[in-house]
Length: 388
Image (cartoon, rainbow, N blue to C red; front, side, top):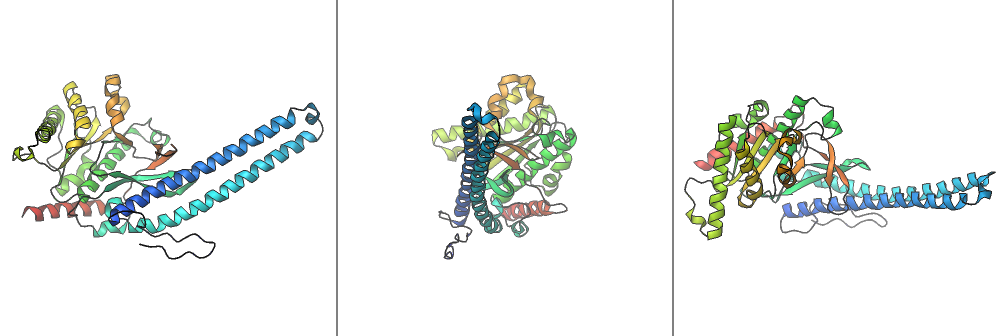
């Protein structure tokens, strides 16, 4: 794609997919990351300019008021007014420059968002209503949106590369953020599990049929409501595991898979894997951790989080860190290894360029929409067709 020539004195009109890349998916992925970096640096420049203006005003006031003669009469007031006027002028220029950058980025977002493929699109994008299960794995998956306080309506899609390089932790704790603290515990836990189910459904929808399996551990059976779309569509690898026995069975199965694939890879003998071993990507969804986990199960979960991603076993965990505090620092490496997201808006993610604290917004399904059920029905139909 090429942008039309810009009019004199005007910025070029943005075009979806005008970044570098071999495919449209790669170009859009690189374009989104370019927008992410541009917004981070534009806001950093604005904040730096405002800080400079404040610092300069303070220095000028210190110099003016250090002379005792300026502390009486109107000289001191005039010095304060002049310093503040200069501060306001510098801040105003910085804001004008930021507004120009934000307007350009908003125009780019307006053309990029409708052009996104399903894996990069929000649930409200019409592309999901015509979604067909692909035959190739996409580059990345959208797991939320990011924004900064300077312009909250300018959202940048948060994309993670596929296959997942690290697990995901949906934080169900009420102390995680102000928004979470305002919700009651049961509602927050349900929202966290609904977020995890939506991510699992997106992963199932963007992988080729039979190339991705989802296992669920729900020790107390408390997530039956949020899990209903996955269960009713018949897209899970098995019924949600409950009780200590179910937890141990699923963890043993996935641990065996990681061990066997690791040994086969090291020996260069991938063809020697047992015929009953599913070589597709595996996702383990864990609800209400550490409920139902004994010390052995916790050790196995840590092993899967550390060793699993390299051989196709991934973790999506819903947990309140406070409830696992009895384990102390033993679980600190587990929490650090996971990408933390929240079921409500929360400012906890930093960009890799300047380190802003970005507000993360989870992807939400439009009220009354049946898009999740439609997507899972398409996944189930594609699996049935592939098995014929």
